Image (cartoon, rainbow, N blue to C red):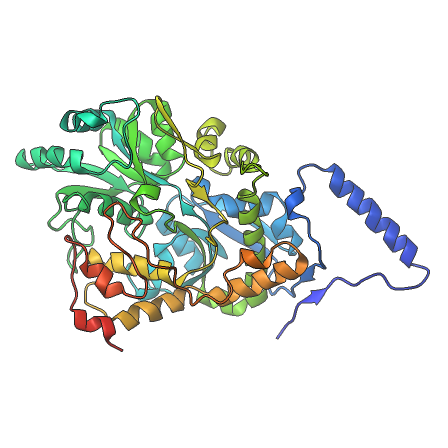
Length: 481
């Protein structure tokens, strides 16, 4: 068993002055290098260094702005502060990313929240994958083609304005879906992966207006049984091109690929996931359970660096303005990271969102990387994803409520997060109030969904059965042990 140690204080003797001088010079250099660290990230305590099992790491990501905590932890030196040398490597798609974490080609990765859960329960690839850090809240949008938007405006004249009232439901889309079905066709829409938040969000948005997005079955792994629309997988950076080519008529994706459609003049974002579910969990940092067991101190060090990155990203001035997001947008715009234009990334990252070129709106919580205790790995987040997997048939058989809670606890690891946070508090990087100490891991019930249905993570069966479209399970399972 290895233990953390602290950097030694100056000892009395002839070398003390020399050591003090060297430290003073180093401090002066750090102050002069403007990009070294944000002032708000200056420690007030002793640095706790961990005895790392592995110091050279490779992390994967997909080209989306919510990879930011990993990128910022590297570029601002937070990984390096923990003794880690990290290589950050773009992956072509979510499946390859997950496979590379499982087979050891990557030590960890920016993951869809549903990926560690699905892998652990054996939907798709079977492997025990865990997370001790949630990377962000919100960050997605649902975009439709210009043609579909024009038809939606015809169906609902209230939408035919440069600044329509939000949130926009899928009600104006329903007649379009019905006309296509009558003609023997289906509206084609894209999402990024079967267990992605995007898949569940677009399904939720459609179903809330009575449009059936389709069911997964043992024989239908595409999830198209009984579907009124056809959902297909498209990698995030390809969404605008596929929309422009006419292969799909709409999609749900993270930024900057909704704003890119606006810039290209090919589509209109009709809603964001903030309106589908206010402050919903989006991505997590995932590692294999085997890797975490073999590298517990390294895992702690990584989580420490990511927590600091999230706080840096959400740092505000006295007036509540985000002070580091423009710098983050410039870093993310580099071709080795997201590779989209700075101006496109800057929109949502600095708290604004274009629904149309005529409709720029302040959305300060479109991307949340630290506040609202968002980086804590909440069990209730995991339970929500499990309810969606069951609702749409990816979990093929009914499960008791106890199974939902047990499965969430296999995947979400708040104990690791809390250890890392305690060290950061001792070092002076965090305040005690920054961390939800004493929680049981379940957020309070919320009705902040587009259909107003309340979600209580402690009651998965009741929540599942509250929806008109999708699987229903016996209420006897709600209290089964």
